[in-house]
Length: 471
Image (cartoon, rainbow, N blue to C red; front, side, top):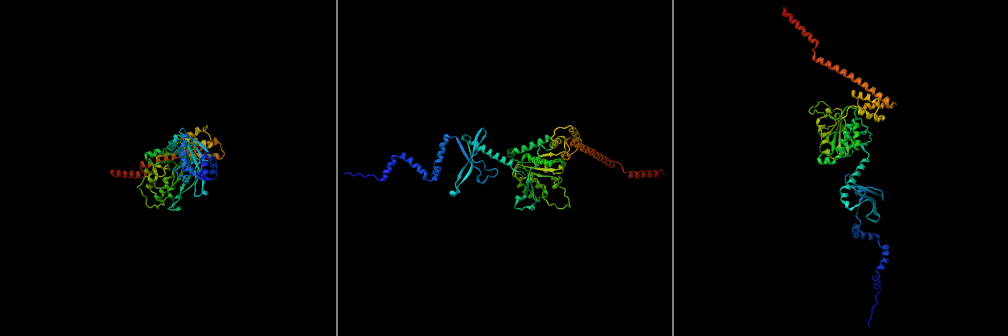
């Protein structure tokens, strides 16, 4: 008699599951999804399925996504890294070289040490066609970084720096070498009293300097340029510096050389300056002994507190240390350019010499437009004729117009007052010229003519000699 063993309970369950696998999966899947840990599925997907899923999607989806953190490494250094910021959920489309790029703000969970340390990390997702991969890497991302830096630079608050005395900061604390105030000077080249052709030449030179970084690097020259502003007092040298800073959107470092003790201190000041700045030394002929006579030494003079030498100043503007930072402009101002050492103002150190001359008619028209908003006037002809004969600075013309305007005078009365002032200066110049000419003629007569007393004595001697001869 054959005995047949009946299957156990587990065997029957196994047989039922195998026979009904499809239907059992629909029953078990919701239970597993409800009770299994969610992180288990995420981990399994990230480790084994994400790469395969992306490859499968790439077959049907030709677009590539690149996530860029808003603050990589706690902030990018100047010139390194990429920092992009957008509002949460914002989408922005950008076009570059005929290609369209989509930026979108996303947030991802960053894993910490524990579950409570997990936090959302904002980032910007760049989506583009895979055919534009090289364009994105080689050109587009550098373009975004460059434009971002330009926008941040343009929106920053510009500063006017001045150097402190060496005793006011520690030898090891060079960060206190400069103090600053916000720079908000209203002068521009449009309001600067100067001939339009001369202003255009200066602006073109400044633009060429700012836009020729690759040229300076290719030719092996430091990215800097020097300007010498010379002319009488009141011709607008300081105003020109403000117009240059506003045109370039640069900071200004105003150096007072009389409180700089040594060449080493001067070098420290240079190292602490930033790029995109104008370094100014005003009235350089008055601050130090930088005249052309290097051999002459004056004895008995008291020792000066500043021991900055001509050699140290030359190294400051044209030495190895002058190349640190880049994109700097050095400006010297003086009332007497002929008193400066030729080595200090030669081309290559002071590349462009700008004469700030007396007020001409075109400069006057700029002042008239600034003060009264007029481009033409019946009295302009008389003013033009007088300006050909009179040397007057733009500062004096501006003060004359301002005084009349503050007194409540209109443009007609103000111009008449200016004409009267120019006539007075013409008469004073004529009187001074006549007095100078008379003094010159008198000096020449004294040099060329004989002294009357000496002449009389000689005549007496000749008469005595003739009498003796007759006897």
